[in-house]
Image (cartoon, one colour):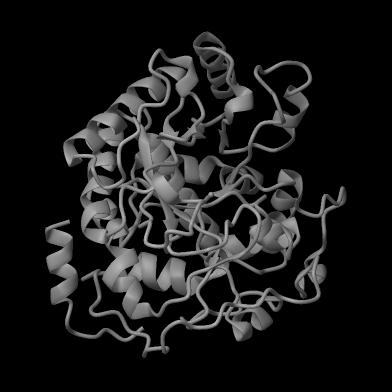
Length: 420
């Protein structure tokens, strides 16, 4: 993407600133050539503004991001088998209502060397039970696990009910929370999560609630404008990470001005690239500057923005229609997020079991497409074994290289070295 000059407004604003086809047999890569599940693609909404030339006001990154390394990272990079490396990329949820590592669960854990797990409310009964569960999960792993959850506070809270005051976020009028309080709320959440054995939080929400009809984000956002949301996002990142829990900005490149809920259908962000740099980008930039360990991609199509590559043959018609989800976009994940924004941390997908993807693609397509686009961690594939096999087949058939695999594994190892 060509670099343009004129980021004055951006800098000024910055400164005052988550059912596949459940096939039991793995698919061969030859079956990944066409979109599955539907023969037609969803229609993008009519453009609300003319398409502008696609260049950001200026490159945010002044130099190519550098992958971190250490003796720990290089030792494990050399020790891990191919299967173990691919397992590090996959973060499933536990089977429904699993609350303990027992004889029923153990074969599932033994089948694939997963790099982490996400906990939901059905996995949570009491403080002692969660502690035992996470301890037992860690004990059976060769490497430390990411144990994650969604504890935003407010209406998205997986463990809040275990504590006297419930979810930490009181019923504030949106946009009325102080920046200091955003830090304190995040720190309280981290102080709850870490003793439970949860070391990664899928928060804060960096989306701007600029569309009043958007209910999937709504008051999960810190506010209606970038000027309000950006400093709150930075404060929340610092509150979580100062207390030892990795923060995850979501949902890149921005879910706040969509009508659709990507849990149920593909969502559309119907604006051009200039609008992204002037608005949606700012809270993510603020969170990156604050040191956020991870960024979560959203299953969001951006029909007014081009530049995506057909990394697999089935992607081309989705690109031609403007419907390709950002989850599969090298433009969004590599050119913008890694390149322009200089983000060197973990890129994590939103849940890959969400219908925005599974209504149109199979598990193997989803896993391979997201990884090729630049994701490091594949969250909640609906069929983890199929996702694992698709990546294994992709490597053996030359779809991606050992260098590309090691790139993501190196980031994961570097983060795991810092786990408390």
